[in-house]
Image 1 (spheres, helix red, strand yellow):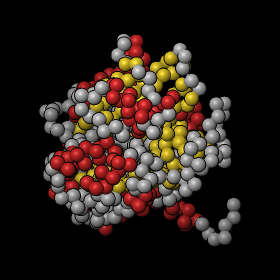
Image 2 (image 1 turned 135 degrees about the vertical axis):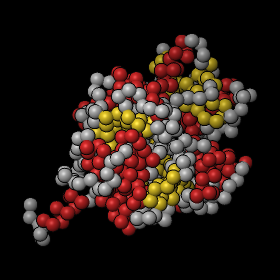
Image 3 (image 1 turned 30 degrees about the vertical axis):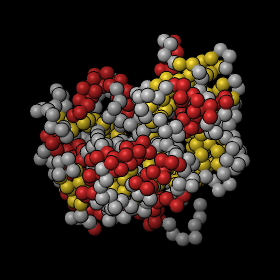
Image 4 (image 1 turned 120 degrees about the horizontal axis):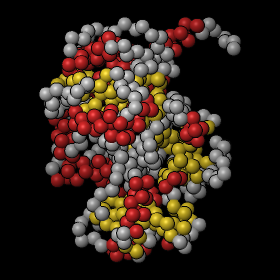
Length: 553
């Protein structure tokens, strides 16, 4: 290929130096004494310089033990300083940070260990029993197993494990020598899908993905060196680590305030006391914050915005959040594989609440036809009439590697011609605002009608005596499938008959969408990222109908 200029130096510099770590190191120089990380529980602060030196100690300790380029550093950690160390330190060696859900069972953890074959495993002492059992079950044994005893629960680590402080004791805090060739395509982070439909999959992210995911947040908030961010949800998922988490905040030169566990009171106290400018969490968390703020108001005027992901904002809830917390509510829609890809800005709300927004600056989102026997081509679009449903597909070359680790079959299923086929069903309008109806694999077919649980859930949730609901199905001889609604009441006096009557009178539900079975419950399974686990409730519904626990309308 010929060019009109000499590309040699640009190509060499860009391909080897355009990395997230280099961006962080620039901030170590330009913001040497500025706070990068603050942990309110311990009262400890890390300047950019101190944080870098702490990460150097961990990196040098691992280097001494032979950890090198492309080795996996697996962790199951709550939001804590250790999580930040486990994100930055591996990059200094060319290794790959691999965070995972700390709520996984020992078997699920062992499955991830066997698949990714980490050289290092770092876990929070709060899940010691899980870690020990997982390692017993796993065929692969990590070379180094480290307990991060944040809560100071243990005098010593289990046999064969070592406490983090003991592991880094005496390690050099200078930048380790770079004895590998960095490249923009190097994998630096491996996430696990949230597992709403089964076994989590490994999602590789490279240097370019990390830099441009950071840029995406920086321009959409926007985020600056003068901002303080706090995630109300765990960092181990894409929306946590990238939406105002470690990746964009430390790249922008801002300050991270650590929240280990979400509590509405603590959150509002921190905002008032520390002047937090951006909060990140799912809509259900915002609901709890709003209730608390109304009863016990705090000065939260420092907030520039609250960013939500994971589910759409209902109109009345959105207005409540804007009136009570901040007028600047943002809502993003996306996936582990592609970060967020559509976005609602404060100017779009509350008018466009209920939608997922339209595509982000560098992304393209389309809705294509659904065929039983093949994947639709990217050009086979459904009409932009806000009625015709199709599959949502995403093009985001800046933020995705378009594959899963060692999973060719699912890679081919999900990625095609530069697009990710999400499996989400939705509609769009003439301005390309997308509305998510549900998932293809959550779809219920009853008497030949395609029914999407999210639509019914949204309608039932407008009943002021309902706190939350989840919709699934059970087999039915005449219908094929019958719709089931599990409802969490707002008050103990709610009856199934009242919910049914509400559904019958709802203008948002067709006759065939009204649930045939109901059950009032206290909770249902959610992922740590705030997503409903429909596949678990589907299994539960089969048991409940067999045991006579579902009430028929």
